[in-house]
Length: 473
Image (tube, rainbow, N blue to C red; front, side):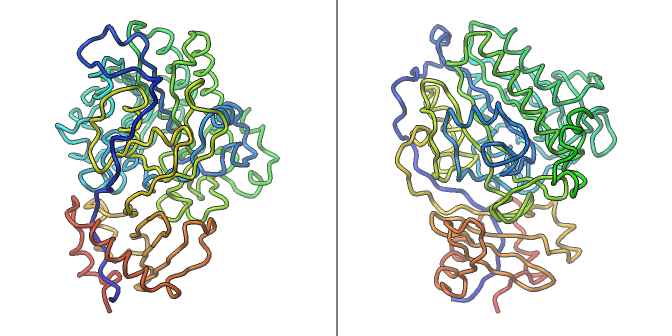
């Protein structure tokens, strides 16, 4: 079987209904009387954090609070995201793997008509309907128009910015518009954004409705571009080798440092409120670090925007004192979309996450046996918003691939040449291209790729025919 044209999207199949721990409460959505003892949930999402930019993965950046959380919980060494920010967030909020509707490339600020579709049931709505107070502190990036506002998609409270990135002090977006909000009210504050987000998360916890548990997403815009940070923290890293030789690294390191300090503030607040042991904390980056802006993904090749390990395998962990055992390191493949079903199971809710796309991985959070996963689609630029790249002939950044329990197939186009790579998933550096050694695996995975791409939103197979990206010989 020959090489085939490579374009279209997927539904990642999955196992559902795994038994969860008996230590969590039962779901009782119709009564608030059972809410008092339900655990709180905090999901922390840094923006463009590199694999090697946390202390527990060997970084020189000081991240003691992140490290303590990771070391006292379960660390995921095979947590897979989309290589761009908004598609990963769409996965988390909806439980859908990008493509069934979700973004397949970034939702740039100001793009009209792009956001979570009306009627799409989000994880925030699920927790709100189960009696939780819900809050988003930080970055949304799921649409800037009124119908896409977080308050319209399950979050009782919102504080932060709607678009993809802002200046950390002036709070202006890429289009020059101011983007800092409390619910739907535009607010102005020139203090450093990361400090504001940590302080707001802490305030929310202290002043919460104590008759309800809370579900909070704390989505920092650090360490995304621009690499701005308080000067005294930048100075702390001035003599670092990375800082001396890479211009953006100083600011980046300081951004991560300040973010860790604010995570520490949130943890101190949980302790002060006496709810630390009743709070599940999940942490994952939305994609790999960007080399150009100071991110570091060593030892993995690739970066943000690419489907190599450095772009899609991110720092991630979960912590829940007394429930998740300390010191677990898991190699189980977990996708962002799995968190919808997993967090439902963790707190004792009936699973209403999208079947076949969001798999309950809660048993694996506490050392459960590794389970086989269905093949997953990997891609970067692949929707109508990328048409200008494609129609202009700029196809060098178009990537497609398939990830299985044993193999990673990547297909890219550079200057009209189709590059096919097959890597053993146990090859961390992805240096040994096995495509010529195992052509039968390549053909099998190309067939799988085309199956996964069928029926996806924003079909771009016609671009293939026009520009000849990896057409069959």
